[in-house]
Image: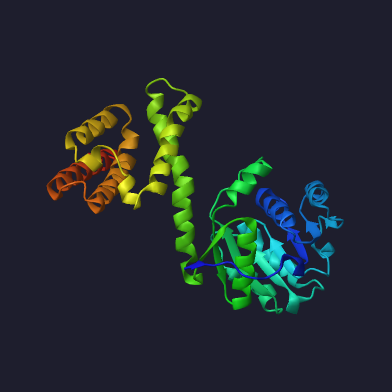
Length: 320
């Protein structure tokens, strides 16, 4: 599933980029620094195209796809998921050397099917998604560190796989091959690892609000423990081995206290706490740190609390 580097030469490419947003700009800067010659930059906002072109030394920039350089043999489409198919369709109508063209898109959710209009013209398509997040305003140093991640690579042709591997390794990352039919599962994993981590931090800050902490102050409290937990996950033999806390210890009395306090103080958080606790019990069982009896007691308590809260939210039947 993990792929080694390839022996292609960056100087053989003539690269054009469509989409000079946070990810597109980061890709262009890293690849230009790695020796990839860029021949054109196209972006919906001309000023952003000009800024990026100036930074990496490209003379051709535009807000019109028709200005893509005809020298292009590697086209990077760093556009939003909802725009990808229509941009590919528009590019397919241009006078480009399609039989010598490789097109890369960077969506976590979409496969190379989104580039179908270009494939039908003879282009090679690949999907290369950095399993990483790129917020606006990220510094160049942070970009360099951010690309030291895994890239989910999907391509139907061997040449597309090889070029994808070359791009990922030159960006500073490693490659994980993702079958086309598994792309949605791959994206779900990313959403859970990144988006839902933010959600967990937000939920924790909501509990801290009951102690009088502002969201900003709560973030300062939460950050060190979350960072250490991630460090524990990275260094532990398995993810389950990094688990700590009352469920890992089989402490049913503490869980009972949590449920009672949430029910009285922040009842709308009880269902999500219970759902997460049930999954945590599964992790503890997998780790082997909790007995079957303790696990059964905790799970029964959680399911009862969750069911009771759900029933209390149901509208009462009208009296007859």
